[in-house]
Length: 420
Ligand SMILES: [Zn+2]
Image (cartoon, rainbow, N blue to C red; front, top):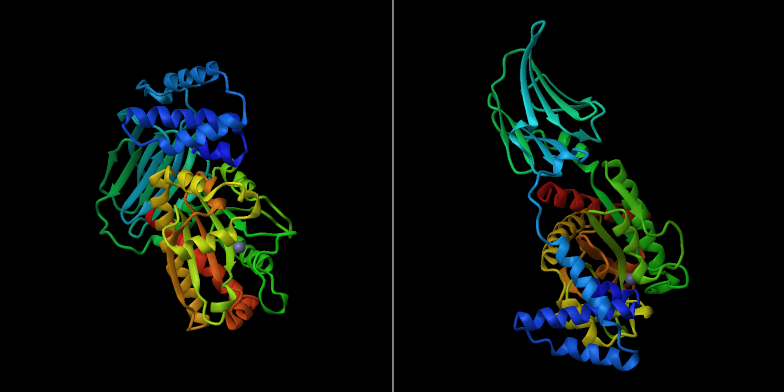
């Protein structure tokens, strides 16, 4: 990733340093490093050799950081609590650091004719203002910041409840044993959960870059912007923190599109585009496709990627592009694929409510540069073919744009419900 970042920033000095590291580490692991070595030679012939001292210092720094310190973090930490939510008969509290047994204190009380189960946690939760959590079978659950660094959860009920708590590595679970598990609480949980999730929506193209062009001068940049805006509003209503890479018709370089997402520490990055087909297949090509970043496997993915990868990336040879992509972090690819599957499924379901004949183009892998810089799960959605006569027309129908946005939002909900 460091290497990729250097390339995207045209930072040749760091490019070299990271290439050298790749070769060095690759050799130690008995991997074939000839591709990297060739890139290195190419770079070397362009420039003066970089100072070796630089590299040595870099490695030293990394080594110093790497060993895991096992001393308790909470001594001087700010006791941050990541998340509090209800699932069936459980209240789940997620911390940002490892826990000790004395992290939680349990008190039983009787107030009037009500029984109280009180749990005090060492920690601050930014959303405790106070909030009411809902669990079927418990009269009232209140959560509030009791002291500056003490979070309190009160379970209030007309009968004495049987509760237990379990301390995990970074999670505390309070279980109410009197309640059978059910799924009725899901919606109440949702908005509280979403509060902590950050989504960056990237509206494709803009300004001098109109993207694909359909009949009657229909520009891709306009329809994807409309859908992005609807999606933005929809997600906000659902409780997410949302940002747009562009809030008007303006040009943004591909490498800068993920900068916002990284700065806001977004949980997911969604790039929205509309597709175009070459003249020979224009009459037939239609449908919705979702891509996640990965080296191109199919000719189709390569073609779509070539369309969407903007001109500022053309300097790189195909071979080097593929080299970069193959070193990508596998875990991010996996979660991007999961996100892609959820979004594609819900998007299609929503679109077909309006037009039954919407084609499922599937979830695909593709080498999209706009996704490379993202440090979080990221996908690129092709909401339809602007070059198809009927689909191109629909992409500019307001009610359909809203339907598409709703579908994407439903998919995002589904992804977070499964991947907290
Ligand atoms: Zn596009």
